[in-house]
Length: 208
Image (cartoon, rainbow, N blue to C red; front, side):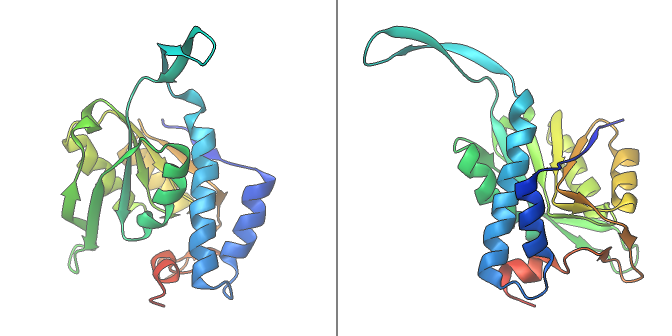
């Protein structure tokens, strides 16, 4: 079973209070979602593998360490885009793939409508990114999509989750670790996380 990590950090908690507030404007909301994404990534990357390289400093030659694998960020369209810049601030060399899902009106299951990934997806560390882990359907389908393209080393990165979404992801992909800034109470009857932060995509892009 993949690990579930809820990141307890004063800066994350402080920023989450502003993100959750319904009166927070679009610009501030977008900025803080990116910042929280970066803070979460800082913790995730503690375990990344390194390799030694020779470097010549202004003084002498020495041995340093660099990342041994590519990092690939895969945001789930559209809300996942709101976390990409924050992650790339920490990992400027990270490549970005994209996967888009829509919900089938009859089956209510997500259907892939767009997918494009860098070739390094088969050998790199893949971060599947979406702020809200609600039902878990889209996250599970996105992880399936990257697995079908050969990805092996996969982590899910979100901001707010709930037990229903975590259970779905654990059942469908027990090999994938889940990182969240907060674990909320439940889903309501319309599929929103409670207390949550509303529709993240609408709040990120001002379409509310």
